[in-house]
Image 1 (tube, protein in one colour):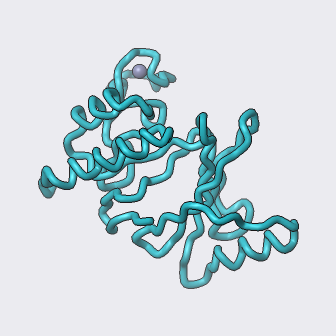
Image 2 (image 1 turned 180 degrees about the vertical axis):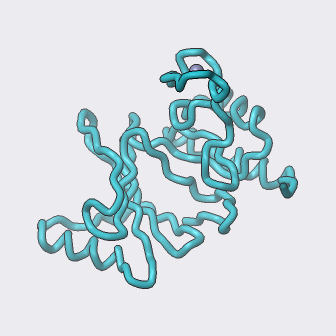
Image 3 (image 1 turned 45 degrees about the vertical axis):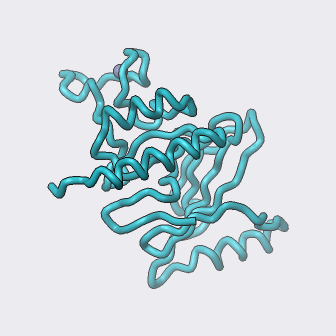
Length: 182
Ligand SMILES: [Zn+2]
């Protein structure tokens, strides 16, 4: 495994801290876009349904926090982190990610425009994160009290929704395929 240079790890932490400061709960991610901290229960004989009740980190999106000291502690425990994830569906922003894929045979952006015309809604001006594979993440805020679930290609081919229990790779994250940018 390639060693992760200190600068990359420090940048990931800096980006995560500034997201947390804006009220977005974050977790460290590894180069594979998966949570950097492994489950403390991975060697349990039976699968354990712990969402952090044990008090330790390593529970994926359930570790996500806006508390700067806790963000620092999570990254200190995962010095191999090269990016960060932003938990969706949580107060105060109730973030919903609209993940528009671009593949040879799928134009998710056109599909979204088509949906908007058919259902008479407009696509608001909002944060757009460009993925290294040419996809786009639109950030929307949801109303509190409404749980928007995760879905994949349910609205239209190539349109995935990141909602409650999901996370988005934050801008500035480095992954095996490149950097996520705004
Ligand atoms: Zn646990």
